[in-house]
Image (tube, rainbow, N blue to C red; front, side, top):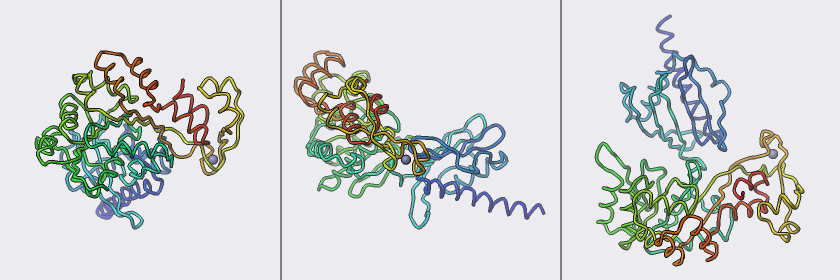
Length: 400
Ligand SMILES: [Zn+2]
């Protein structure tokens, strides 16, 4: 009896773990969390930015906790089973419904045991398709591509976590990789494999840091360097230095918008003249709810409401605006999928002068707008409102 139970338990765990992965792909989840609670284990998926518990996964018996963790560790082949009190990272490749899918696994010890966060890398969150990322907006795509023709300098991608900035940065690297140039990416860890790029995983245990890998990359006479994220002075400095010495360097920074990125570099200790002489283009992004395209219908807003977010009288009469009431396709939410609200900034010489001379955020923003080099999140939100992709409530988050 006991033996039979143990055999069944092994099979049960293998099936349970497989199902968690399989269902996440079928649901197109961007994240999976397996968390031990005091009395049970809970599985959550994140889809379109919203967390939910898939059916049957709300109360997995707590006794299965370590079995589930161990099964996942075994699948990674690199994680250590006996280590239960330290964070671990790994990767799993599984064949699901005939397609190979990579998952990035992170484990952290919590008061109730090891908690697992899983990110499927097949997912749209790392789609490298710029048409999709820019919602097929030709003028944005052209402006983006034009700036990728830069031979040197620094391009930064800004946005808070889950803002789509990494997708944008990787899409840029992917575009550059189509040209005949030598590219090295240094990431923690590599998010998605890019054909034609040499990709390096940062490994702190082996002293392979962003900075040491970048120094080595510059010696290789590369054309393009992509640094996963500027986190501190050392990474910032070596990235900008690359842009100054004949390379095109790309990286991401966790900031709210393009202009704030310049000031964040100063806060990290980067001299204003170095920022001004290297940073040439900044793209910022924020993901937001897209209205359901199946149940959207025309809606009339008052002129006062529309003027408040910056629409002109002409725009108000010329555009039909939409809102979604909810249908079966969007689970009655009225929203389905996510859309990136984009910001783009090329640095003009008057902006750079003002920045070096200590102008504040407000002044720099004013100059950038005056020089016509700043397409803001508000501009893009209004464009997407007029295009019938977001509703007024969402547009307001970017314009007020
Ligand atoms: Zn709908």
